[in-house]
Length: 208
Ligand code: TMP
Image (tube, rainbow, N blue to C red):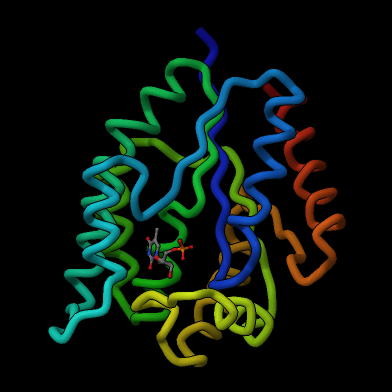
């Protein structure tokens, strides 16, 4: 059985990656490709419970190390119970966020130790790495104005603008040094964003 492809969507808050998921699903269906869509943190019932712990507002401050470890605890469950079995079964897996978010949010923006994140990634991922990461890039003010229109914001949405700027800068830096990335200009019209995403999907299909 040929293994499926693993595609992740990354970007700052309000970058439009979740909106683009509907277009990606339609493309996969048109092309008769078996797939699952999922997200991080979360993706399984247990990992979704961890997501609620991570993102909810509470009085007690969440220590940065706790946040990092909870991300990887959720990821371990997600990889073993959902991602790996689907890839082994030949399905394409499309995940709204994955380990690149940990390098950017817990590493660059929170000032976490990147070597420690490398160690956690080596332990938890066990070689489960994306074939392609689509980075939805949008200026921070544009992204945050989209988030402001939502009914609710979570603990990370509510970080200061400087935090979100560090997130954007770190993603753009990672594009330069990691060849699994494709940069998508998410400030364009939805039609153009979808066209650029489609080009990436066609390319991956051709290599399948
Ligand atoms: P979402 O708003 O795109 O659903 O993502 C949830 C939040 O979790 C978002 O603010 C980014 C954050 N996050 C991390 O900080 N580290 C991670 O490893 C992941 C997967 C998400």
